[in-house]
Length: 34
Image (cartoon, rainbow, N blue to C red; front, side, top):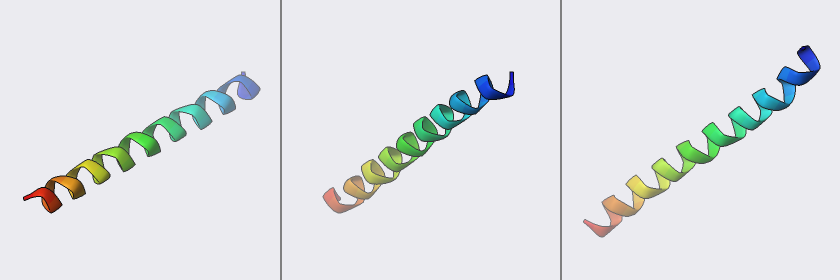
């Protein structure tokens, strides 16, 4: 169970990080465009 949860936690963490960085980048570009 634990060995199964580690990969999913890693994937979830990676997905969250990439999504957050995309949001930050998009907001930055929006500010630059304005």
